[in-house]
Image 1 (cartoon, rainbow, N blue to C red):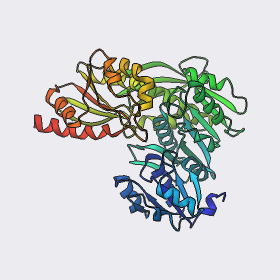
Image 2 (cartoon, one colour; image 1 turned 30 degrees about the horizontal axis):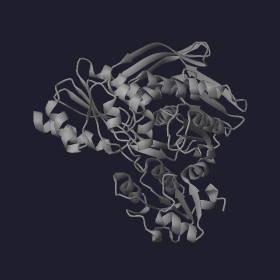
Image 3 (spheres, rainbow, N blue to C red; image 1 turned 45 degrees about the vertical axis):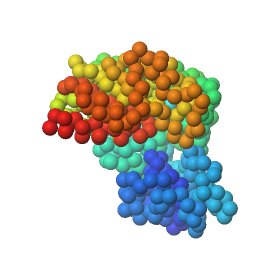
Length: 461
């Protein structure tokens, strides 16, 4: 079976792990195409409830019987081959597709823009969607995070453009075949899948080779990995952005503020305006530059794109302010790679001003901790206080000798506190006005932020 979007209309598609950030977006768009959606997830959630309200039938347990009667089963590569639903689908000889292949089908009728990169994909994809909406383009989008303004991670628009976050973690982004693509940066990560930095670089080369020959690649010239990729590309046009005057889109007159940033944008030698963002950090200015360069090359107006960028209020778990109590600010952020943590803490330091920066970090995966524990130690020491929780395993089995103590033992003033209750009590009891407390990581550390806000409210109430 080689399904097309049209052939799936009226058919039933079953999503294993439907509550995940990427999978839930596909389910939402499938429903909008009159595709019958069923799915399963290990737990109930607000995402699951929202999909049920739209008409999806969802089980909160993985059972073999869930796939019976489905015309197609979609799964992510994070799903174990021993998953009872995947096993039963095989027994019944049901058609199965990876999440990336399914997204490729949903994108097939549109002019697609795939946003890739080791860091910044979710934010850049979200900025792209918001900027195009400001131009009246009403794009479709499927993003691995919730856009704050809309409260959604996916939308079927009426316009011809489809913005998709392209996850490189398992190499499956080669399925997308986009009209255009953005690459924000390339760095070694996902060490459970990519043994070396060269393996990551090759995956991006393979991805870029799938871009439509009449399309283009927008890349960050400030990033050595993205620049190295661009040097290999001959199959499509190249658009560069960064701080060098040699770029197609150059940023200068950069101003970084506590909760925002500003820069002048110069497109091929002509000043087209000032980007003013309500999200902090130099990295977010570069993300916005990627969006502006891509939009301009697609023929949209600079003024409308810049206006849209100014309205962007972030995405869930990307430097997300969860509450302010007695002058103490609590931030939640998804950063789980040393480079991401470095730029996040730089932004947090500006936000803190004269206050202290207190970090609660949860490492994500044993393999990543083993590979980068020294780098984690170095960047976490930039905080005034850094507490490290135990590793969030995700789907990995433990690696002997690999614990969070690898990080704290390499730090000057790191604290290893694995107990969530002990951590929140300590932080709440010792917080002072003007402090910034940031929960950091891709696991369930995010659950601590509202607990800390509540604890502070009780303490100072």
